[in-house]
Length: 231
Ligand SMILES: Nc1ncnc2c1ncn2[C@@H]1O[C@H](COP(=O)(O)OP(=O)(O)OP(=O)(O)O)[C@@H](O)[C@H]1O
Ligand SMILES: [Mg+2]
Image (tube, rainbow, N blue to C red):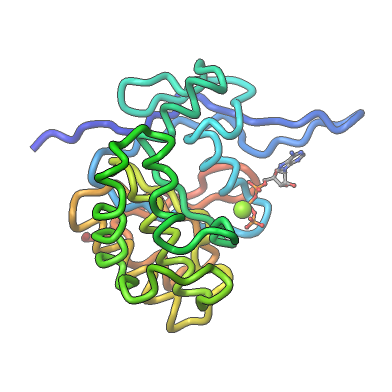
């Protein structure tokens, strides 16, 4: 089977002007992630992991180089185009969950469907099915403040899946969770990968990265290792 490239970085760099000096968050990097991969990005704090992820989603603009995701040249899109593209093409999961505090679990999951323009009659049943999938159906009407950290993250993953994006990007999704809960979240991401999602996971923790089929190691803004395991 020939692999289809989903994410392509072509000599992409990111630098910040800090007065006199320049801070290079990512040195020129070329990278390809194929559809169906489960990639972990690891490395010490400040090594450029979030920068790399934010370049893939267009949250950050590259200083140089091109970012392609599927057919779209992300680095060339304006903010409106990016917002529309993100809404249908990527699911984002963050360390601090970022659920809207005044909305219940199911309302949080329905929100991206609203922005996407999904038929309103279809949203509740679809959101309920997603909550079911992440094991949170029984908490559908809870506010985020009425959920544990792990439960909030599962709702956030359901929200990331709302518009059925092919690509799931998670930046330290377990950074705020205990070990047992972290393992549940990683198992959930692995299950979603098993169902066909392409998953890119940023993590500090090598033992969590071990579930991925490929581990990209960053150090000081450079890829120092890119290793495929047996998966
Ligand atoms: N807006 C900014 N202005 C200046 N420097 C920045 C900016 N954003 C990030 N950096 C720098 O770029 C480097 C890479 O940051 P990045 O957030 O990608 O690291 P990280 O690997 O995600 O770290 P962590 O594990 O702590 O989240 C760091 O040295 C950081 O200080
Ligand atoms: Mg980071």
